[in-house]
Image 1: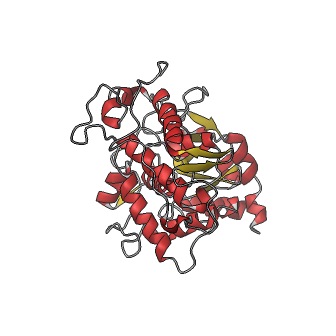
Image 2: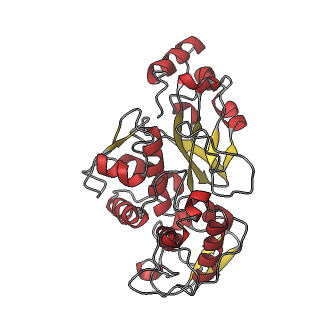
Length: 348
């Protein structure tokens, strides 16, 4: 969008509202350096309201066209709209408040670059999935997982591992639903609420839910993948998750779609092999519409509304030597990758 967002009041339900972790100390250890009505970015402390306004403007200015029509119901109101009976609440603004509260509450969330927070934590959606008010639900559930941990996480890597190990099982996820992988579900089931209701999704659906869960506890995350292995659409697509940590993006699969692999080792992903890299193009989804790259969606190839980063060079480099690093001969590693991926042209 090219127009400035309408002026709005940063107060009332659905507007900027801060909340510090109990005791004035963030989860994950460490003392607060910002006051209760501030959040901490890498550039220093900023008032909650100013951080809210910055993220609000960024999200509004980069709305995809299909969200522009529903801007008011997403929470992008002018100040002339009366704040009556919660009518100012919206999915986007509720998610933004939850994101800022996570930035205050969790030590691993603090000190992130503001532009990374705005795009990869505060964003209420990933690609063109149905918009859900999922953030408060996930925030509560993931916070309970963190509180129940025998060894509480202290950094991004440990919280990602903890959540990926616990969020999919009804016995540990506080969501009363086990989620499993089921191939070929996109676009029928890939928004996060549908994934929870049905209890299954394919790689796109579980990746979106995983991203939303990580964002709910202040971890910058985004969907990544390829629309076609080896640039042959009959070979099928795949999606997974990238996590921002220490100034760089690393990748991991949602446990139902992979094996709950680590962030630190690219070679523990089934698809990270020389055979899968040949002619394959890789992308990561983003929110900023100004960059000019499109995130191609295998289930909606004529939709150019989702911006992206071209990650082909990164994955070619990260995965190019994986077979030899794990002690496999190239032919053996190719066979393992083929066994893990059936090569179906159904959309993951």
